[in-house]
Image (cartoon, rainbow, N blue to C red; front, side, top):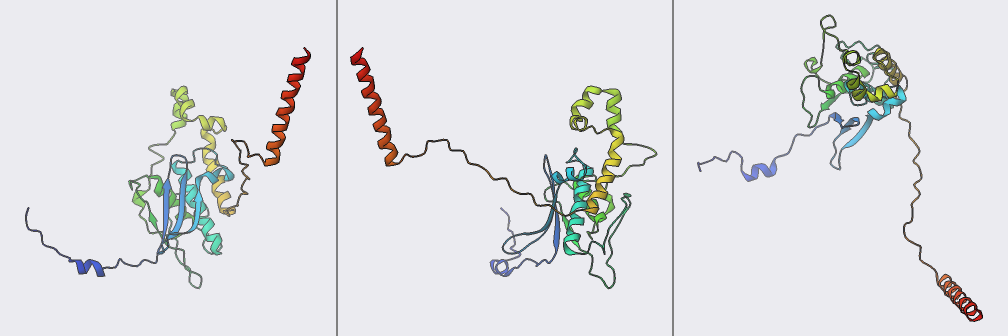
Length: 257
């Protein structure tokens, strides 16, 4: 084994301190059935969640299917931004992109007003490749009015003149069985390809109009008892007396017969 020079000794590691951060992070987690967007900051005791939004809240705004696709990630990010600004009372100052166009949009602080809420994307273990759903949530958050440094290179784009995304229509014409298999939830909720664009536009408007989280009442859980409850002394004596009486009656009937 060759000689390896020790650049930092034990004393150096002992006095080393990590850089203190005063920044909030936008955390995006995508599971098999949900999309989770959170604004958090670190403390010694643990991370503090300032605000959160979930894709399973989207049915309230009209999106009942496709809760884990790119469009749902955008809606969840938009909901997070509107909810956060509403909580801090600056939603009227920084309204964000009122009409969603898909163009590049960046929030700038307004003179004489509180500064724009700035945070940084935390993609976690997700692959930051172009078109990842994490960046869909990022785009929704930016359009909602938050200031997040980003590059447009990660957003998927297509030229409407050269190519259109009409996979649902293609399957309806070419392979109806595959369409029923892949889009069964869309069929169940009577969502056709022609309704998709209007559905998401209405969802964006509904999110911007009322992003406040409505706390649901927890249902009281009634515990089931699988074993018999313990008997009191009086109940045990009564049970013994009943058995004795039953036995004596049986003996009398046997003697009479």
